[in-house]
Image (cartoon, rainbow, N blue to C red):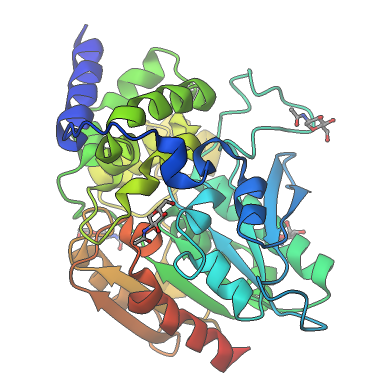
Length: 404
Ligand SMILES: *[C@@H]1O[C@H](CO)[C@@H](O)[C@H](O)[C@H]1NC(C)=O
Ligand SMILES: *[C@@H]1O[C@H](CO)[C@@H](O)[C@H](O)[C@H]1NC(C)=O
Ligand SMILES: *[C@@H]1O[C@H](CO)[C@@H](O)[C@H](O)[C@H]1NC(C)=O
Ligand SMILES: *[C@@H]1O[C@H](CO)[C@@H](O)[C@H](O)[C@H]1NC(C)=O
């Protein structure tokens, strides 16, 4: 009963924080060039870029889909191109890197600058719901959190890009959970240290102790994640296809309502969104994840530690870790040979400014190249704001040009 009430409260929270009903009589298809109904590849190719889809299998059998934009709008003008890897955040997918128009979204900008752009998808999102032996209907399939994304997904993705392109190294760019998993990858896999000597983090997250008042904190303090697990939920935002079709319908009448669930969990945006693109967002977001991953995030808020999944009791943790407490991911041990550039937002409710500042203090000083704070940016603005091209991406391109 309590869990149902909390679930209703969460839904109420999501709707009240995100719904400003603005009736729009224009059909959305006209406004967006039909992007809302297109697939990832169709959107990219619609703007005159080539787009490839690749599959990589992790060491524990998950089959991940990667998208690649091998060159820019001006054609195949370079003989070889430095690959760059982009990795999305919580509940998101590679779609995040093409949400806006050429000249605005990072994937297009990098492709037009002469880079070979690869975009990963973590296990369990819309594009990566397959496994060599486990059925996506099974509980075992959904038994993962960002820990496995760090230990398996990112290393496998990097290895694939390095091997396919023949380049030994690449710049890695992660947003939100794409930074959490990167700390874990760098701390656990020495090949990652060699493959990605430059790590650019947008809205970097580790310890989320000071997370502000958003849906994730709400979920954590009311133990909604634990209640949902007890109810047997495996997948968070259970059926992306169903949800997406509801979302697109919802967006027919209301441009501003659509980024709903993601905004509710990540905090509302403060930068400039293109409201006319929100039905495109609705057609492709949220990417979905496992409930266990949401539990892991919520544990970070409750337990104020950046650590492996807590199985809830000393005995259960001993079974998994041979230790009564989950191991801490200690960013003080981050490899000092890797250069880190961080971009954080003054209004970010998820990568809270205090937590980011603590994170920066813990990194080896020889690692940190740049830490830029964008005062009016919140958690989605790094990828979705239409001015991110000037506020962040110019710096990103310059960093890559300098180090590669
Ligand atoms: C906003 O998106 C619409 C639809 O894709 C596009 O036509 C328009 O040019 C975009 N506006 C800006 C300011 O980028
Ligand atoms: C899942 O992967 C297997 C093995 O590669 C493949 O045969 C199958 O078609 C894939 N299923 C889906 C739904 O993509
Ligand atoms: C690092 O990741 C690669 C790719 O998944 C894997 O082959 C390798 O065994 C991993 N190394 C370590 C030390 O875990
Ligand atoms: C996380 O932050 C909390 C509160 O600021 C602090 O007590 C804890 O030691 C931090 N943990 C790590 C691993 O930095």
